[in-house]
Amino acid sequence: DAKTTQPNSMESNEEEPVHLPCNHSTISGTDYIHWYRQLPSQGPEYVIHGLTSNVNNRMASLAIAEDRKSSTLILHRATLRDAAVYYCILRDDGSSNTGKLIFGQGTTLQVKP
Amino acid sequence: KAGVTQTPRYLIKTRGQQVTLSCSPISGHRSVSWYQQTPGQGLQFLFEYFSETQRNKGNFPGRFSGRQFSNSRSEMNVSTLELGDSALYLCASSWVGRNTGELFFGEGSRLTVL
Image (cartoon, rainbow over all chains, first blue to last red; front, top):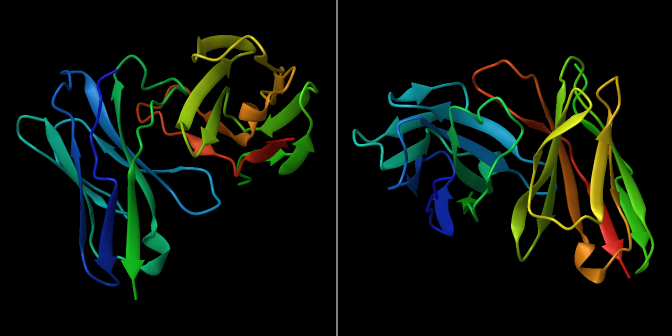
């Protein structure tokens, strides 16, 4: 599985946008970019995923570089509830229908009131 | 719609004992995966069951095993417990066939080995 690189930690102020970067220089053409987050004392939860085009949902936006070697998860208005560890994960097309995820260390996001 | 349910939530065992953890997936989900989370190693994939068959396995010793029942409920077992097995064990279910492959995680079973 291709590897991702994320900053260990980031800080944000409440109600400001947050841009969480992820590098994946060895991404293959069939790799989907998935984001999960883990709130304190909870299991991870799905946030968003994409292949080539930018994606939006009710939780966040995903901006994917044209060469797909990096991507950015965008939280438009951070709330205290968004404080969590955010994981950027690559899943190839063949494994997207399985329950196997390869987690890295993720980015710990701190949101200040 | 009920989420993924894991029992027990907390348990304490001593070295050498064995433990069984249970996971009830979301209704209709046929895939159940297990993960171990520790401060040092982070989240690591243990194994996945689909239609009562193990179809993916992580890099863990044979002391870690699992099974899935016909109703998709799953159990994992750890035999001959070691101190290093202290961890949060997470179960995730998914509905195979969706191209998102979105996994739904439970809150975990926290195992302490003394």
